[in-house]
Image (tube, rainbow over all chains, first blue to last red; front, side, top):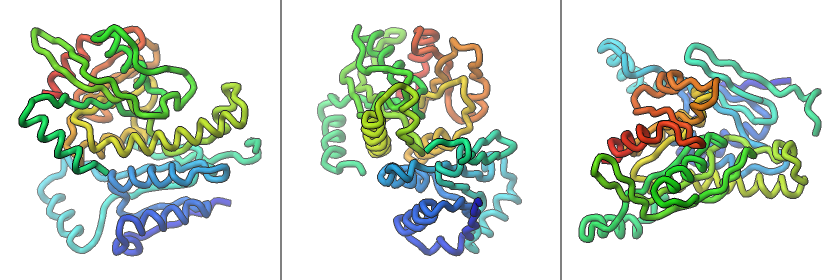
Length: 126
Length: 209
């Protein structure tokens, strides 16, 4: 059975970077596929990869991750004002999907779609 | 984290002696051809190779540096230190190495070293003056590892050149790489066969200067 857990931005926004990563790692290692509202920054993603590498062992083989964010380049003035106001009220656009590599085989992203492929455990020899 | 003393020393050498050379890092996912490109560059300008290459992922598990490489382009010279880094990955499964006829012990050891290599690559990112992101042009470029590497370089304001490698292969699609990262200069190369290296050096000179 797959467990998808949605994490609203309000739940982790008040945490510092280390506490946030610790919480995410703990959930991932408990076989949860996380959907993070607001998404992670590229800096946080790099730190998450670092923490993942530090914790890899026989049981935990790593993560699959995918962040989707808005295309900022072509934003019109109205959209920019709207986004600035939303940001001021604590809303973050975009989302990040993270799952343990033992469950999520691959997250495929073409610009227009995201596909999450899971590991077929029946075919996997362990 | 960057070493403040080293940063000060680099700054001092740069300003007062002009002896600090530009540090160019080769970054990218595993098996994209970073070490093959490193060897191509050092063969072109020093006549020798610097890294071992293999089709088995995570062949480079430690940072390898070659110092004082002087390249020439249209009468201009560029002296740099080249840093070949272990490929960045989000997962490392020792069982993947068993396919390459390794023993379980060897596979586990390689996986352990590979995780340390990824951490080292990330730690060295801050000390780079310029980064060549080496991507396999036969593979979909929209992977999170590629996006994360490039996002971090952009956040640090480190100049980037994208080398779309393996253009000698039929499935190579440089346009897809260009479309994925339109804000950066992309050059299609075959590091293995030395294809389009003149254009690569031309672009590298532009990006570094």
